[in-house]
Image (cartoon, rainbow, N blue to C red; front, side):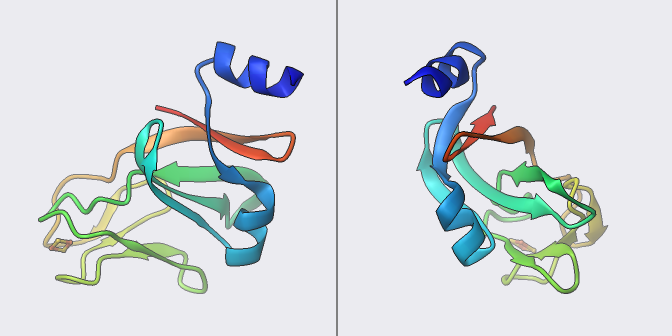
Length: 112
Ligand code: FES
């Protein structure tokens, strides 16, 4: 299918479906083609997506997206990260890695 070809040629890889994103409010795929990835709709612009590597930069726990608070929260030592990956609260010191993400047809695609 054409959109798949376009996605592949531009370096974007499918990590899940739009249906799953809208059902769960996120896609958490730890074994995607680009590695561990967490995709959400941008809370400030529902037409765009945000994708991060959800591996906490402190000691490697998986962060969770807090939809109402609009930040990523680490369950292990309570670090918090902004939607763009920046550290809001320690003990983490480095930002989460971020990826480009968009919708192609029925797929959510991410570029590492
Ligand atoms: Fe995330 Fe420690 S592993 S705050």
